[in-house]
Image 1 (cartoon, helix red, strand yellow):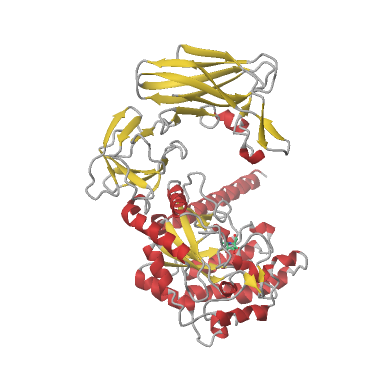
Image 2 (cartoon, rainbow, N blue to C red):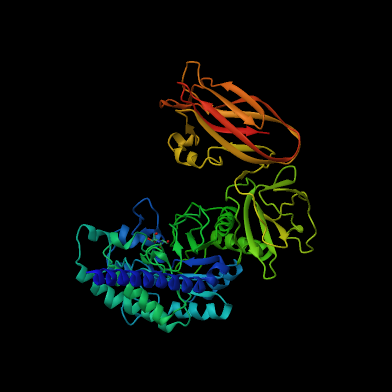
Length: 605
Ligand code: FHN
């Protein structure tokens, strides 16, 4: 009995150890494979297929369904397969030149392209032996667009990646389409599709077109909620690893990076931007308007500045951005798209150093109201911090809160001469005196050079562009507060983030105040009680300001629809005297009595 127990313990230990070792090895390989991807940061997605020729309209009827994804027209407008394939006749082959897309990607500063080799319609853009539903069979020209793209990528030094719709395939009788939720197929039937189309087609893509840097699968829900089995996914993954060990695989394969550490990176939802710093690689796929495939009715164009800021946002959190183009059936990229990409490219030509191979810095992502920070460690141990100014301060003073070290030098990245920008530094605060802004760049970048990786003081409330400090329910040092914050988008967002105070409560904030001054203190809250009662004290060292909560009444959100919400009002509560620059703690102590106030912020300036 004793030996049996020992044996079981030993086996369990070995299993656990092997599992852990395998995970570590998988993670290490993933990290090595994804090195180029972290360096690249910016890529082009290309949605091009039969749907491009429909342009979002079928027999005079616009795409059904309010999620205007034009590439979904086959499914949405219930089109017959053979009729749908006739869209091929609208393609203008003499004009189609995929090399132009690669040249555009290059001009935009993108480092890789991902082409929809096969989208949900099941139509392959290459000469596929595994299925006749491909471009070669249906054209007299026998074009292999994938081959043409592979050649162009090689010629211009762009990484080639493929989108392959593995889960959904509307063409194959046993491929998945959502209507099968009503008319199901069996697992055995689905496996016929898997073995006769998915496996051989992915094999073709990985065998016939040279080095493939990434396979981008598109199952946006976990495999457990779909017809695909884990066994099928593992079969596919193992084949990819065998055929092209360096090819990246995204999490939309259907396996999350948490479930399988051999998945190389996480793909966020469509147009979902990063929200937190991650240590593993990740990517947002994004559109310039709404649809991925060409849609003649498109009217939701995003501005170049927004797209650029999204790229910067993602890099500041260690992410990637893959921005889509949906060329027409003559290969043309609409001017709305090409112009935006060229403008981003112009910016990257000058400022690319803050993007390519750069990543997140340790300060809180929302700490500064003027923009976003990225960072790069140099080989000699020096570090460059890049301040991306989304909102140029009117007084040309830029406040950086939280970095303890003094930079050696500051300059504008767009200034070839690296002319020094003057700055003052004390303890955890750097103030830069910017040159007056010229209106040339969409986003100006300031470089701060350090002779080592700078240390930070975490959790300080930053000085805002207009010289104040906003002490909110989000930046308090009281971590528990976060769980109590009430946020709602109801009533058009007219109810701000707040904490309802039911019991005696205390919140505090850490600040660095950089000069002696008299600070005005305001507080914003909502109090619905008409009774007197409830009070608060705001403390700064041995100074305190005390007041009672006052009723704030209601607010009419929109006329005539009885939409009345709690009013949030700010009150001045007095002044604090700051004798010298330094670190300070501000405390808010609330005794709500019966008034149940809802606290929003303190503003000091
Ligand atoms: O359904 C597809 C859609 O057509 C498009 O390809 C996007 C790109 O991320 N992926 C799916 C929806 O998330």
